[in-house]
Image 1 (cartoon, helix red, strand yellow):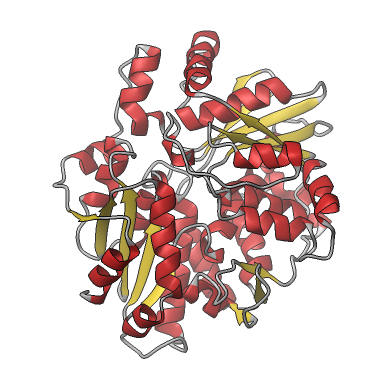
Image 2 (cartoon, one colour):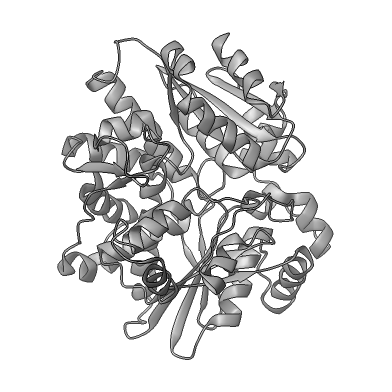
Length: 447
């Protein structure tokens, strides 16, 4: 499989280069030249298949030309050592619980998969650099990405991870999950917002002096190996719903969206044949995609801090992939591209007050505890679901990761799972950093 840049000015890359570089030379995001459709027989058989077997078949379509089949199977099975159940919340509304991995967040799958795939290329081929040379992973996080990537790469030989996060703008438990690890993980506390962290990462990739000094890649959803495996979730969700006997129902997927990597993976799954009738992208107050759906104009803006902090993104990177996908790599006009997107995706945006009210109402009506991000998905689905449809919203992280907020809103005392408690016992280790790129560059040159 070959990969091209969304900006159209970089050389075509193979999978290894796309994974190891992360970002194309022209600052564009890598896209697969073709998206292989899955056989109808596979779609029909999914309800009788395990999550791991479903994921391996999907992974083979994306990565099978570039990774040995046995190695790819090992990567998939090692990544998916947990389940992601579909839980009924009320009539025709289900939660896809994506928080059963090591850090109790949906990004565990993509992070662990990428770690194993990157290790495969480093150890097995070494064509991207000298043997024994360290690959340095830069990752910006608004919450859960940092913890998932840090834990996915922890202790992996030949890789060092730098997690950039906005000071005071992630939950205390999220912060513990990537600042207490040590070893090959360095946490960098940036005096700014998530968009500043993301800008520092992208600027580093484009800096010639830095790239001569060290091998850099990213584990944000800008990396194809991070976002594509998240499509596994949606195929598995379809299979589990069909297991319940809802053979004739139209399925709607609602995805709480920040940097848009998760819903982007679902859209790639749809292109491969995933039988979902439509999608809903649920935003918090950071609503640039919602406004694009309404107007056809994409106008990035500075992010604002909200209850659903992992979605606090004012310029979502993966919008470029969505635009490229539905413009057929620029072949369609802006108007026709907008029409193609809005025919499949609708949007929603909610204030903090609406998020809190939704959490209280759902808990009172059903007993189900939503985290602030899942609350956006649940409310959008409840408001937009049509007769005859079955809706699945993504509950992207365990509510205990936002314990202070959840307890305050619901009047509860959410139990903290043992895995999270273990992180909270560690000692914080972080490097204070301004949002000035020259300061960040100086730090990396000294590493």
